[in-house]
Image 1 (cartoon, rainbow, N blue to C red):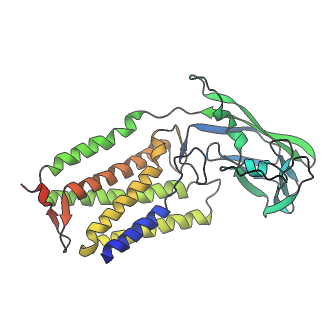
Image 2: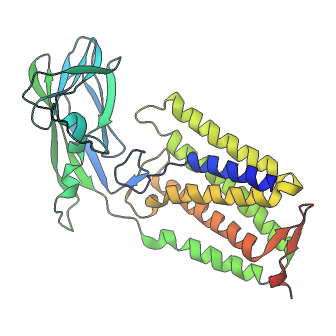
Length: 333
């Protein structure tokens, strides 16, 4: 009972290390895939701008001698980059609406009122969720058209009008053949299980568990080593924490009394990671540190290996108190 409780705690810890909103187009956690890509066409001289997470956020870096104001949805001052750092206007409705999860606009947010600036960050760089990058995604789209239109972010630079301009593109979904390896692999495992050989089941479990561990580390690396636009220390710490949990589970496998529950916890962890990356299999543009085919292969590996390990555990072999594989009675000849 104690072993099960500890492994359950490890599995819950692993689940906490897995983003929970990966299926949303926009949400509180970074997406892993999307159907839309925003690209920048022009920026003012000296200002660095990048699109983050395909079409979700805008990152700006402003030179030290420049005061830049980003205008809001009604043309009011919204963000200000200056010697004081980055400030946000509490009287701007965009402060509350221009978010991944929009908030209710308070009655005090009047765009015609003088700006009420609140410093939110020191330095000259900042990124924020910007609805204007992907607003065209919610309009009608011709089936044969990939270019959806042009977007603009109005600015004032040292009091003079300026803008950042770009466009939004639609990316069609990948081929559905990416889903076929999962049922094919499970059918093959069922065929091997029908041989009713505990040693063969143990070999399958070992191979699947090693594959799951590799997929767990790879899926975390895809997210945590992907710069937005740089890789902060917090993302590296997140990767280290997930790797530590995987290492503890590996050590538990080496203990015979813990082997079965540790294998089960690893399978659950890998399944959660695979489900997190599931959008990469049906959305056209993937967001990660590797090329799209490798990211989809990683998601496919995590899903297939975890489902296979659970199948073998529950329909095939089990482990005695000494960690040796045995056949379940319902599968006995």
